[in-house]
Amino acid sequence: MIYTKTGDNGTTSLANGDRVPKSDQRIEAYGTADELNSYFGWLNALLAQIGEQLPPEEPLSDVSVHIQQIGIVQNKLFNLGAYLSCAPGEWLTAADVTDIEHWIDAIQVELPPQHAFILPAGSEAIAATHICRTVTRRLERLMVRLADENDRNEDLKIAIRWVNRLSDYCFVLARKCAILQKKSPVEWKK
Image 1 (cartoon, helix red, strand yellow):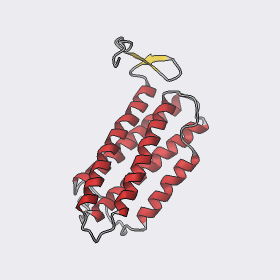
Image 2 (spheres, one colour):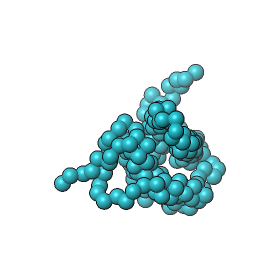
Image 3 (cartoon, one colour):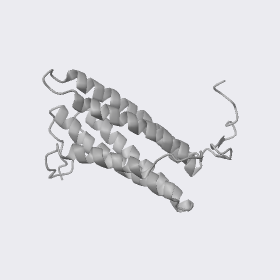
């Protein structure tokens, strides 16, 4: 049955069985990870549309690489949610952080130098990527607050680093979407 009625009093269970208020910092953090996962699902659908719209002479493998990467991100976000809900086990590793760094490096090689701040605009895919970036930053802030309330263990430090890199990945991916869609960056005007 989908409804249990156990949360009707404003509490919920963590993976370790502890009941906490639904307003608990930990619930806010893993709920934001879940929200972010949904936005990445939307972004992946938009990337697939970009791939379908590219002319036949353009290599589609470029878009498919990013679609695969986002699939990995979505699975890692589930891992992060499990970790934040106190499920035992190793959920994110230093290698996961390194993987995103490699993805960022590979995209940055293809990008022209940036000389201005860029607005989250230009196309639906660009805007969606920036939504992913800003929700990722919110998740990071929530996790840092959670870390400040508790002891910073190594797993939490790794998780915070992974989320930090994820927002950087979103920023360069938004710039890459502009290139794929032949859109000029929308620069901030003072």
